[in-house]
Amino acid sequence: MRTRSLPTINEVNILFLVLGLVLLIFGSMVQQRDLYIGVLITEYIFILAPNLIYLKMRGYSLKNVLGLNPITVRQIIQIFLIMIFAYPMAVFLNYIILILVNSVSPAMPIGVPVPTNLMDYLVGLLVIAVTPGICEEVMFRGTMQSAYSRMGDKKAILISALLFGMFHFNLLNLLGPLFLGIVLGIIRYKTDSLYGSILGHTINNGIALTLGFLLTGLSENIQEITEQAPLIPEGLQLIITLVMLGSWALFSFVVLYLLLRNLKGAGNITSMDDDTDMEDSSTEPEESEMESINISWAPIVVIAGIFIFLNYRYFFLI
Image (tube, rainbow, N blue to C red):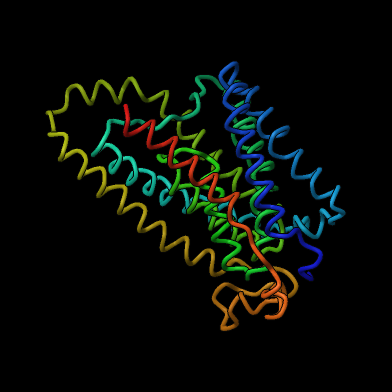
């Protein structure tokens, strides 16, 4: 795919800034009224629609930019396993941030409502798992990663993952999404298909929702056991939890690496571990073209500044 058929980096940076501001101003308003309806409005109207309208108005091919190519049954199975082993690492990274923030200011992560019955669970899967899987992947692994591939695929994966993490505007939920963004970016690259990263994103959110749903039924029993158990100093509890999560995450990361290494793509898509560096791939522009690209990082800096200000105000000025 030739770079001239892709959106420019400056265009997607401006799009990122505009949608970030819309999300902050209007997204919180609609989600405060009704979370599920607000999420649907935020994802489909504030994120998905502007991305698709922008691509069509600029005359870009949705199939080429987004990578709307089919994936195989084998890839579906591989992606399912990849996301199962990526989830513990994301949880561990978010837990590290929680510990660091709590050392300065008491903080608790804000999650989605846990479903208490089967109907709520099924609705939650549609709203919390499938919807962000589609809408956010179109924006980050589709529009953003394709545009940044002008700088080389490694940088495209890392930058789009960083933007994905910042887009959550929550310090406690930064490293987990950033890590998952890298994993999803690799899936998108290796399969040459947005459907792969959509599936991965949906599976990740589905795992979180499913675990919450299953643990809800056990919460009363867990509380009884906790009350009867001998008191453990808070510091020791922290260390035990950290060691357990860290061990789980380390094992999962090793398996995840092997799974990603063996994820096979189609056509001329090469492995991340091939001797040929990704930055030498067909999406890499020639040196003369790179010199002509004057990238404006101002939109990203603005969003980063807002991210820092909001989290500093929320966690450290309370």
